[in-house]
Length: 269
Image (cartoon, rainbow, N blue to C red; front, side):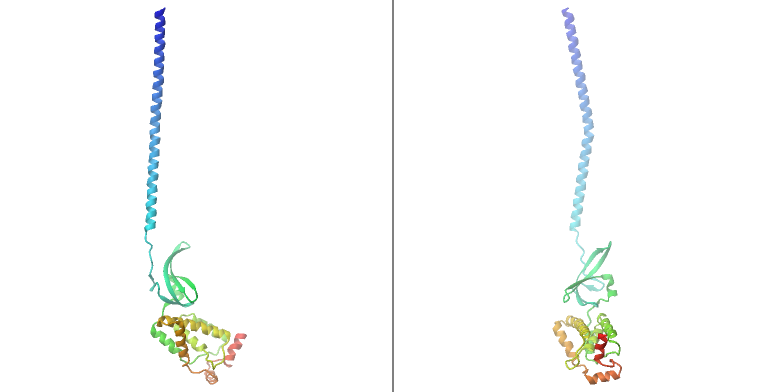
């Protein structure tokens, strides 16, 4: 009996040992399988992290390049350059402050930035449109001299309605032609001995005088006050337009039948 009991105990111990080995082997196999599964996942995570780092570095480099890229500065287009004085027919003498690029409606445009200091106004004009708007360089000294000589001539007043003459004067003022502007100043000038002007005549005269004096001042490097004095000095040399002068002009068909009073009457009508 003791021997049987011993054998039974030995068998039980052996079976327990085998069971533990089986469990241990299963556990080892499971851990190995888990480690094999975990390794690809870890590698995928590592690859993702490396890729994100590469993307971040590329974005950082691109941003540095964008920041460090020098901006192109435009200084000259269509024969005009920055800081140059020009004549813009609708507004007179202005100065080009800059030439800039802007994106408008999906298209990139180059623009002249023109400042009219006296009017406290800044205008942006497409560089491709300057021919259409009539923008030009300042007149040469010879042309300025011709304009000043024009002021000494006899006034030419057409025998037409004042409203039509006013339109012609406005067209000359906005033409940008310095000689045409001088003609308006000459025709609308009134000395102290002559009849007073109507309000609209005075407005047109002052507009033409302002355009003319500004350009002469910039060309001759003098103040506008000095330019106005020079203009008035030239006008003083023109033939006096008193009653006799107007009578002669009427005979030649250069003035309204009723003289200056006709201009006022037409304006009132």
